[in-house]
Image (cartoon, rainbow, N blue to C red; front, side, top):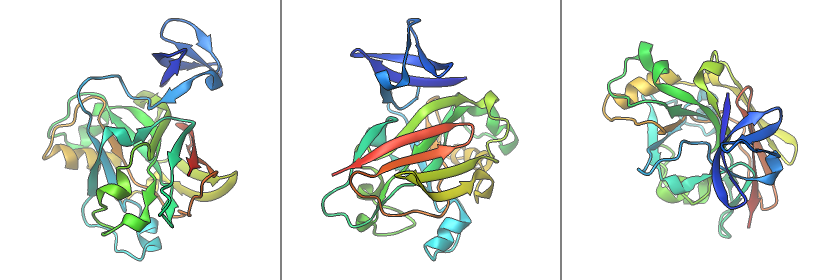
Length: 249
């Protein structure tokens, strides 16, 4: 099943996909373009943990002339960085290189601590699509990007859907694609991750506890290009969804 969170007529709703429409939690059915989309994560009061991977595809590391990491290169993101489907992301006036990153997002479904690799998928609620924009002008170190590179408000669109884990038979064999103004600029496949989903869950929960609704962004393949104000960027993962975002000045 595909789950979403939206705002309709000033009120937030959980929703599911129904024959190309949105079935709201109160039973009403509305068109997808009649709502404001939110990140499709369960509503919760406590802050959530968002873990993001750097250089988790060997071809992307090669694109940047860097050696593939020997262990996961991870950094934390604030919840305000998240943005919804069909939203906008601002390009700062002083930036000369802003690029998308199409990523598979893994959403944790239950409390996870010291999880073994072979048990890892049992802790996944579902999957979504992320576009983890980066602002290279602020980059000080590829291996540990600073806050201004990866934590700007609204610079990580997520959605449209959270797809139940049981409906994704093999998350390590999903095709990724990015288009900018309709032109394909990035392709890849999750099978080419350096550290796969089970190994990431085992690694992170070996020293920290993950809670329901926490998110792991699993990295991007090569093929990033500069995005300008007015560009419409669609990051798509087969079987998960197509996430649309517009860059604004």
